[in-house]
Image (cartoon, rainbow, N blue to C red; front, side, top):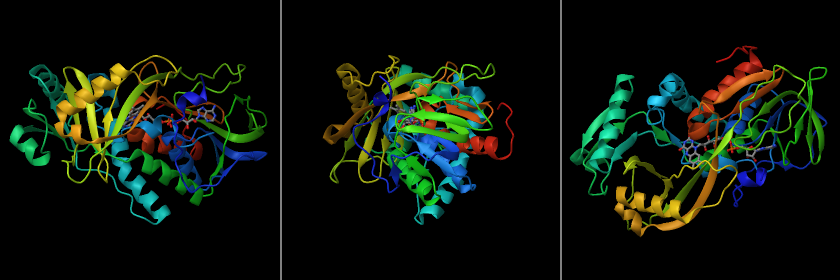
Length: 387
Ligand SMILES: Cc1cc2nc3c(=O)[nH]c(=O)nc-3n(C[C@H](O)[C@H](O)[C@H](O)COP(=O)(O)OP(=O)(O)OC[C@H]3O[C@@H](n4cnc5c(N)ncnc54)[C@H](O)[C@@H]3O)c2cc1C
């Protein structure tokens, strides 16, 4: 299984011009139009570069399935302590990122910036949640303990077992599908061309350019950016001894999208919880929908939805927010989170004019602005040292 494994069934409907014709050459080719490739393409086009995005189905892949949480604090656990600064920088970069995007599209693009609630279901969950919150507080992150009364004021209708929790004030959430459409549109506004095919092979650099081989022909690019998510990489030149791109593994995650009519209780806050040790979250969207996520299974390029995982997810979701019983199921989807062995994203120039932006794992949305700036920096100012 290759690209099919990453493509969701429903197309986004952005207003960009997609072509099945490759230009003979271009300045920058971005391979992959998920949140990472699109953010990079848009940034580079805004800086005046000629950019082509090559992807058979941009805006699909893991990015289409994600919860869209900007969990700079929640995603900083013990294993991620070294990433705390990077998480914070990228979280803060979302405001200018959206301001720029709003200007390009001449509309106000907003996101949920009121914070995230973290709760635990039983006393063991709560001890774990308290332990991590204390660690986050020690790192200087903005976490505030809330008792049940305070939780009820912010978020009426939590399950009866929830006795206390935390407000992570700096964590936000973005509508993943809306922002993908907006980025594709903003790429179009800035002259990015989209070519609907997949890259099978990237050649060695010759005379300052590389050939890209696709099923519809070849093109050459001075700079090639590989942002292919969890998919297998295109074939790379073996002759470059310096060329080191880490293995990217897929970690499957299933979400359920549910819709609550005007008569049922709604959430204002993203709620993350441990439910008997299992992580679970609910991310509200404007208009009454909520994203319930997510399972996490390493089983290769396999997008099937297990009944058992789904049953558990729905069961855990209703324990946190019982009103979920009255919601209608809109969609069930699985995506493949792209991760490196270290779970740390790899954003480097690996060979002259060949940049990899891979392995964003659980945080592609949180980290997209920082990755786009980092790649722009690599391309624009020649600062090509390791992060
Ligand atoms: C269930 C789930 C929940 C998540 N929740 C969150 C969250 O709340 N917050 C958060 O920050 N992150 C979240 N993530 C993680 C986030 O979705 C990923 O980190 C992010 O989408 C990765 O983006 P990407 O652009 O690297 O990959 P993708 O979105 O997978 O895009 C890769 C693109 O590359 C294209 N491609 C692949 N190979 C080729 C090729 N050879 N030629 C041309 N094109 C190619 C594909 O068609 C695809 O469009 C979640 C992920 C999952 C699965």
